[in-house]
Length: 266
Ligand SMILES: [Zn+2]
Image 1 (cartoon, rainbow, N blue to C red):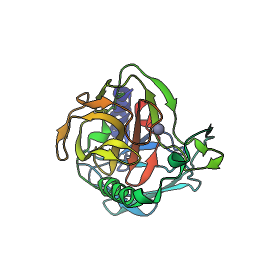
Image 2: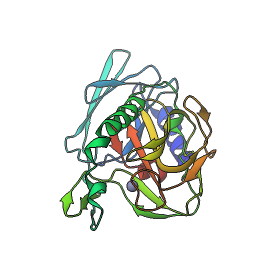
Image 3: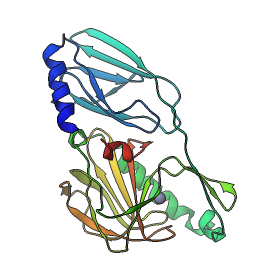
């Protein structure tokens, strides 16, 4: 698919006028979108300028509940092109989980400080706006054999109370299963014991695109380390707030939570 995409890019470049602009990815709620234009172009998404790589690649994503059209503005050599893209809506599942210990639904006050600190560290890692451009390549699944037990966007009702939607993909597999990096990247967070997410790793793939792995049993990587796609970064576990062994992965464009399957299905 990526090959075909490159061919399409090349084709478009060869026939284009000064405005080469291509998108890969659906303009749909929760989507990761990869774009390509000229390296010298300035790109604005919803009036906010975003990075363009030295090869002309850029990336952004659409929120779970995004309703407004996306405003794309490209400036190349003082020429301006503006377009509006409609965002397709999605239907999300409703997931009810009953009989949870109350402590799991509402954390006790003594852990609030810990949760605040964890959230701060995760937020900080997701704000990183580096110029690496690994996001343009094809991502791979983090484990080989799994059952998907949780999907993006589902509305969770825990013990009858509506809670935050689930933003990850849950891969169920035996504890200790090796977990691979989905893409080249740099480790920007590596923590063994976060309250909700347990053993947690965040990888930066460039331009604000990051992936997060949670509930890890062992973690083999350190903050600052460069990782290659396919490298074993740890093992699957059930650390943090988890009801059984599984790997939950997240995909972000800065603080916008995206559907990880939109990078994997390409
Ligand atoms: Zn999950």
